[in-house]
Image (cartoon, rainbow, N blue to C red; front, side, top):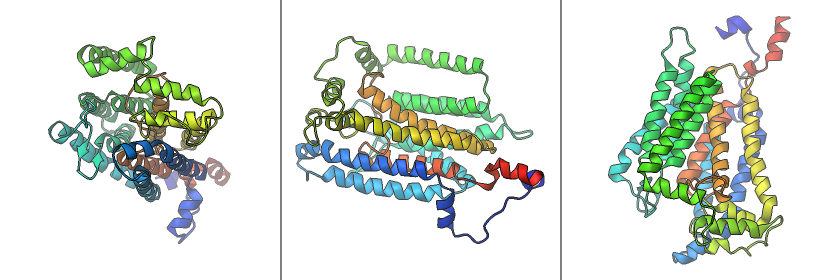
Length: 387
């Protein structure tokens, strides 16, 4: 049908997959992701050594593990980015189904590792956080449902996606993992907005979310404790937020010097949730701004390439993945500077963690696949042929 309306687009016959992938991929976004991975290894050399010594391990134990998982994630990202949109839809749907079942099994087989939230499966030699893998699958599955509502006599996909996001958010909140629940809701809201949802309906949904937040504050001690700590006018210097705030202040513009920071010896999560504090203390505001620029480049370029996309699924899924990627980074850094309450969320490709970095590789691989240049994107070629 597309060829009947717009005409056929020239295709390079017999072009090998790798040259075609390299020609169509967004090289700026790919370079920024590789840059973030490099920054993560650099910061891991500083942030993870104290933890390794505390646990009686080789000083570079966590760095080597991060390099292994990161290399695996980059390989997965490149492999996924070679897929066409229909394969991305299948991969996301299967991934969402597996992640959903894994989340449902957490109350029975999961563990909290002493952190007060049952979010992980312990495998002995490693741990898996299924919510990390659920996110990209959910975005793709919800985008598929929404896109189906644009078809003639199609199902009410937007309503189905709303039911799915409510169920998933509730399951995550019960862990409790309000950070991931908020991120899932946000990514769905972005896709719903792109799909043409009226502002009034979005306002009602925001009101429901606020109501749920108030209810959670009154019913969950874990949630209330974090909100109270965020709203408090005084910061306990012995808490993670206190250590992180002090480290950022000490770093200033140029930092205290490579290896000279002290926050990594005090923060138990310096290599994961608060790794940006290590960056700010040792390398200063300059490195922090570089990290922000890398994330912003990926998000802005992805959204700009999706603006010319005519396929509903590709546009919705790409927008959701791009915004989820950027907002997760924003939440992590916002917590460190006390602009947001603590959420226990990693910095994609920078923080230590096998589940986090591999899931980020899958998500960004999907995003790169959906933002690849395709002949039908070039509207000026269609207009030229029409003349």
